[in-house]
Length: 142
Image 1 (tube, one colour):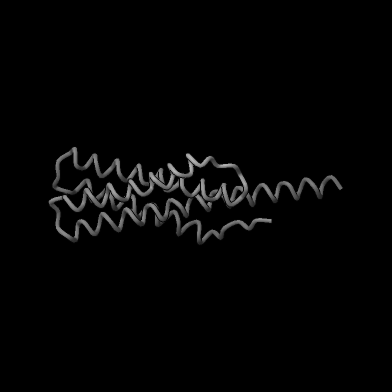
Image 2 (cartoon, helix red, strand yellow):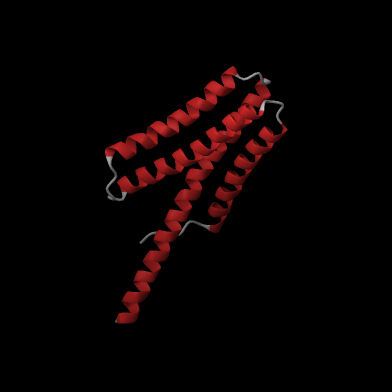
């Protein structure tokens, strides 16, 4: 039987995701850079979030014995690495203060980590609910 994550952990994960993503985007909004640069950094964040959640799902599926193709598993890892690399290369070449570069790097990292935690919590909650429903059906049929 799977245990549902605590409400504190679920809340902390959502707060971390919102803090990271909102801070990153507020930083972009206030940044003195061209609109195409802002678009690049926004697209990297969205790509990174999707890649991290996809990777978490692929790893979790494989651990639970759900078939995952090697190509999907590989693309998930590759996409996560590429999104991080795109951010690093963009920041390395950006005409920004080191503190701004660090801010974007930390809020990006926080967002990716939190997206994985939120995805895990959602999946664990659904699994726990499914187990509870299954157990209540079994007990009512007896």
